[in-house]
Length: 517
Image (cartoon, rainbow, N blue to C red; front, side):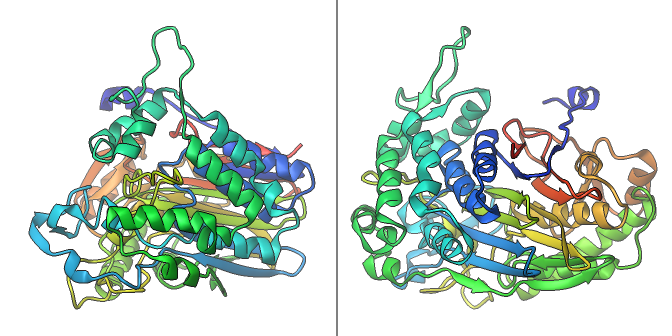
């Protein structure tokens, strides 16, 4: 999209409202799956599990059973918030010597020093032990009401019929085509003709089909989640991983367990923010908002408040990069939020890390696998250095806010290091400026990925742009479909009348909210 075109084009998405609950996700099909669960009496976690697997089937290049993530859950009746940590882990057999440093910087637009053959970025050596299935297993046992098999039925159906190819699917596949061609199983699924699939002028239906993924999902639904780690699916995974040279073995899978944790909770204005703790962007979010407390007010952001935001984001990221070791650039992740009619909320972020993860589709299971090893700093002796059995630092930042103990809003985003700035600003728009979701999501934002230049939405009011330019080196960029200069957020909210609203990033063609009937 050209700069001139983006300045004249106005895009909007109106928040969806329902008193029975809403799902806001990066894909309309998956949001509809979750909303249908709510309509039929499932709770927010039931809807979240169904949505999570539907997302893995309808946009497998973003997330799926081969990845990991974090889920924040708020139970309205109990006034309790907990976090399900299902982050990826390095194999216990990982040898850092497998990843010798090379000259220059890494590929994949990454900030690390280069590794020989990009082994930490693509291929079998880039794969970490996946946690997504274990995370959904723990959430199901702890919070859900529907059966495991019933919650996976929609994902199985989607996987069986395949992904409908439109211009956006073509764009996603074309963007990774050079890497996908290096792996026969990946090439055969996403580019069976040798080229990315493209609709003809008549719009004749095309679908990306992965029958082995459909069979794996059907088995996962019938056999249960532990089959992924200790059963027939585990056997398939280990066989394929071993054949490709990965150190992940049966012991790694059998030992993996998701963790239930207390959230990182802190006050910000009238809100009590509950974020994922530990090796996430939650601590950096807390630091950012802590520096802004009491400095922002009014009906909309002012020049002074946006300067304060930029200063806080730069300071918080400098601290993060120094003490936590993270130097990521944007990743390809998916986030969604759910609220049910009782006010229970979920904010869930799941990822393969890069677009198409490791770019490896395992031949026997049909699963597209993560490249979680890329999260580690390949240099030894720093806080985020790779090591056997170690958890890497991630940028995921799902949050739930309460007010006077009652659920208020949930928000999260995809986009690597752009996630936390987006979550922080949207939270501020809702808390400090009293915006509704429609205003909060169309409000121009800045992005500060750790330092200058500060990226400014091209539709930012001129007084704010001038104030930022007087203080920082800036660049003015559009909110495009591609390339993405800003994160892709989604959110649900309890409104003043007791009803619920949900919305997702308006620039992303598949992102949408769906309300329960």
